[in-house]
Amino acid sequence: MKIIGTGSARPSMRVTNSMLENFLDTNDEWIVTRTGIHERRVISNENLEDMAADAANKALADAGITSDQVDFIICSNVVNEFVTPGLGCIIQGKIGATCPTVDINCACTGFLYALDIAESFLITKDMNNILIVCAEEPSRMMDWRDRSSCILFGDAAGAVVVTKGDDLKAIRLSTHCKVEALYQKRRLQPTPFLNKEEDDGGVIMNGQEVFKLAVSSSIKDIDTVLSVAGMTADDIDLYVLHQANVRIIEAIRHFVKQDKEKFPVNLDKYGNTSSASIPALLDDLSRGNMLKRGEMLLLSAFGAGFTTGAAVLRWSK
Ligand code: COA
Image (cartoon, rainbow, N blue to C red; front, side, top):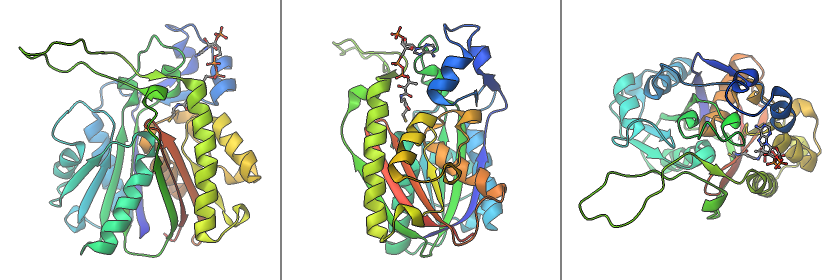
């Protein structure tokens, strides 16, 4: 496969660290030093469905194709206002496509899982263009009284169009069941037969455990994809990592012993936008003319599950 178009959309509301000080026992200095985040975008009056369709339409326009040329839509999403139908179905209608769609919930690693599914479908099925849309509103999952988690996240949508090509040099996905490190449960509708208590509330996260899991799994994945691709860390031009915490990115950077310039960061402005993080960053880089044809990118992400994934991808757009 190869990427031929990118797009992104973000809510208009900017929530700075100092705005959080109004209702949380926190401060800008703590958040910046521990995470690198200065502000994030949070849904106020937008709908995630519209943001997802906006990102998708921008990716289609960038690819120079129309929605009737899309053969399959893969939507990565953890939560949105619709329990059913899947967000991919709603996006399909909004952009005027007619192809089948599937939703995946692989948390922050969703984009890597979607890339691998797209690659497999391009090889095994009679398809040309696959649209991947990662649309997330983690702000609606947080307990906004929990200062250790709500400060980290922001909402966004990121999309790419992929077609047949030879740019994916290696990809590795993994899942190690570790529910207690990062999860959210919700209370479902009662029934006349229900005889148990159900949890309801915001995301529960063991920040330090997630930090360690993120760094250790990401460096393992990076090692693997580099060796599958027959490359060394020096051969990679840009490390496009999941934007969760600048300290996690720094720890990974020290492991691969590469310059800071190879690690683009936008989490200072947007926080952790779950699976939208990597495609939206790719879109920012592409539209900012910061990606050159032929460059080798290494993508790596991790998230609730614990899911992880990494890929080596040539940029040929
Ligand atoms: N403002 C001020 N103080 C805060 C705070 C906040 N927003 N959040 C937590 N603290 C306090 C804690 O209560 C604790 O106080 P104590 O020492 O009096 O008990 C202290 O800061 C240190 O907390 P700790 O949890 O040890 O901080 P940390 O250095 O581990 O940083 C995270 C916390 C969440 C920033 C960090 O663990 C992290 O980024 N983990 C990864 C999370 C992640 O990326 N999740 C998504 C994965 S996809």
